[in-house]
Length: 398
Image (cartoon, rainbow, N blue to C red; front, side, top):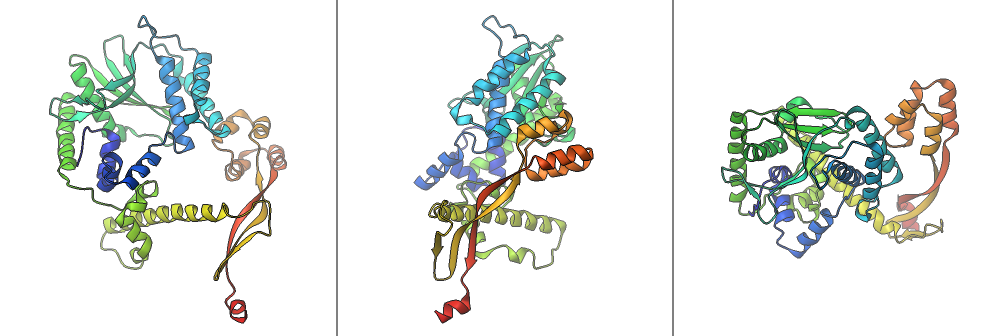
């Protein structure tokens, strides 16, 4: 298959499912190209958009001036840049995510952002898409490094920002493919310097890993085997796994279509010979659930668009089913009201203001505060999408 260069993202996709890799990076049909365009749309999710806004703001904030000097770490300037990135149409985020980003940067700045550093580079490119950086063992790599810091002792620290909600362990960092690729690049670029790699986990802290020359060389040898393995494939091979839940290519994937046709019931109705078989089955079932959920959402959207949301008597009736929008209400909490009622430490832990998240916090609150929170809830009307099977007896009489 076509492999112009290796990156951590490309390698993971190829290992998880070479069929998805082929559609993403070397599409052969018009349908695949359309699906690729949809999957590449900037920030398909709110979390991804928020990550782009935070990364952009931090990189601009750390960028050296025209004289190569690192700007002083001022929080007001960081927030101004955050707003500038949030204004970009392709990174538009909802209010709750906007506030989450503000709180994240406030906490990060108070803990670590105030410390002065000497920035060597921000958004450092490793080659280009047309001309990737070539490792000395012949493996082409390409990507951008968020931040490179030069310490007083001459050591070079390569840093990658992560806004993930899950922390990264030291063991994970010590064996991370992205860390290995960046360290391999840095060892060639700065052969006489001490090199370290750090994940700047913005919600948690810094996880640093230092690899000696032997480990870097061993990683490069492994990376070459992966590069050659992907290149040797004549075509992508479909694989069912956890990534199917988010894959853009399930509609053209023969394995996914077969799974939707036959279901995954056979995976839970027999004994397993080993833990590996059981876990393989679990991954397949999760993939099936994800694929079917996406298909369900697509079908529901089709019918919702055909119903008049302002006419509760509007129905779609077929030989076997009836579809309608039924008026209901649900309780919601207003973020500004919660911020007014709750102690800052409690409100700061509620990353997304949902009924479930708020109710989880109620038991730790004083009784009077909990009552105020409950009283602040509002009832919001909505139309519930309702599908009913036709009454067989009634249908027969008619």
